[in-house]
Structures are given as C-alpha cells and as structure tokens.
Length: 202
Image (tube, rainbow, N blue to C red; front, side, top):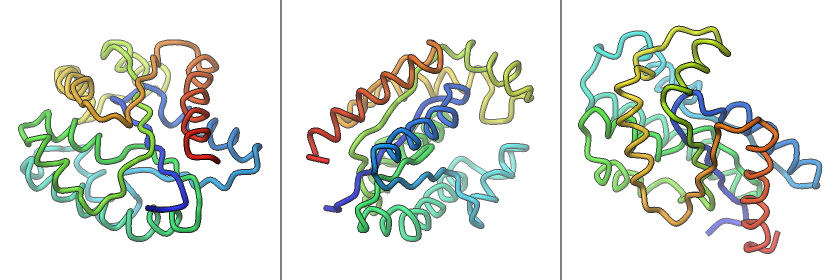
C-alpha cells in the first residue's frame, strides 16, 4: 500500500530492542536508504499517561490501559508512521501493536480483540521478535540498566507476555535469539532485513 517499509522491534523488556534498532538504522543509512526511528509509547499526551502507569499500574483498569495504548498508536500512525511510509521511508519502530496484544493480553484483555482494534494501523512488513528467557531479561534490567523493575516488568507478568509473544502466528514475525552477543544478534537482524529488501526489490 505504501512505498516505504515498516519494521517493528518486539519482545519482552530487556531483550535489547533499544540497542539493536539504532544499529540497524545506521547500517541501512550507510547503504543510502532513508530511515526513520521511532518508538512506542510516544512522547505525546497519551504516551505520557502510559508512562505514569509504569510507576503505578493500579491507576486504571486493563481496559482503560488498552484504550490509552490504542489512542497513542492512532496518533503515532497518523502523525509519524503513515506520512513516512508514504514518502518511501523505512520506518523502524521500537514496539508496535504486537506489544499491546502481549502486555494487555497478559492482564486479561483478549489478544484477538486487540489485533482487531488495530485495523487503522499499517501492518508491518517485518516484525523482529527478540526472544530471551525472562530471568535473563530481568537480570539485564537490574544489572545492565541499573533499574528497579517497573509495574510492567515483574517476572510473573513477563512470563505471560513471553508466552503470548510465542503464540502469535503472523507470517511477518521473525524470531531472533537475543541471548547472544550484540554483534551476533545484529547480524541475524540484518539477514532478516536483507531478505525483506530483496523481496521488496529495494
């Protein structure tokens, strides 16, 4: 539908999405391609409300939480993703609606219903789903980032999220083992993206 390409980085917290995405962006720009880097939640008004939930998730119900994510994504698609795709840009997003289906699905919302609510959102050309055991992800958050686990990062919660991510059957998903060194993970990511570029004639 669009001349651009949409690539989403997904996975539980601590899998290295925010490390790997800029590395891929640099690689693609060095090849002369136009790239936009973005993330969700956004820095917009709904995204700020979502970040407040990181500190205390009890502020709203799962349904209210889901509504915030959908509203934030609507704005993100309208103001960032769709215009960039229309201009032929390769859009790299750190999280997309697969995260919402997994994280809000883990607190009781129906993942199928969540996917259905995103008919307004362009389907990704590629989803790079970074996989990592939950114990390793929480260890990275604590030890590498030096952070305390927020309300979305508790182990029991992440186990459910990881299980949902593993269950998604979408053909655009490529699973990447994120337990390896950064360079090896990036190599696998570039190989998957290269296959996409060849398929799309880029």
